[in-house]
Image: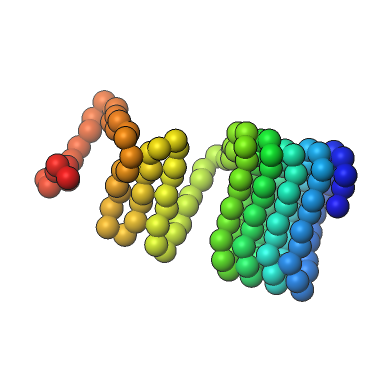
Length: 155
């Protein structure tokens, strides 16, 4: 536990290995910079709590038997060149400010459902397709838009 701001700079490899879960609590902002890679292997879960979090990592690898959670009363930013996370349970990032992930490519792979929420609207992607919930407007833009019947039908 750190009562104020925390800055961590690692030139090459940062590693966390635990037979149990890990927990980090920072009273102020948390800034972490890792030059090459961060590897984390924990038998339990990973949880962090801080005022705001900024993390810059070349390669970020996480293997946690349980969940991974970050909670910030401010903003969360993760900048990475490559990232692979294997979690036994869930992942949660909660920020009362901005939560940003910056990467060259982002892939989300779920066996059941991916839900994106903003205000009162939701975009739900599951095995049956893509659905929208809430009082929202859907806009599709592009120079060429193709749809094979019955791709779009009133619901």
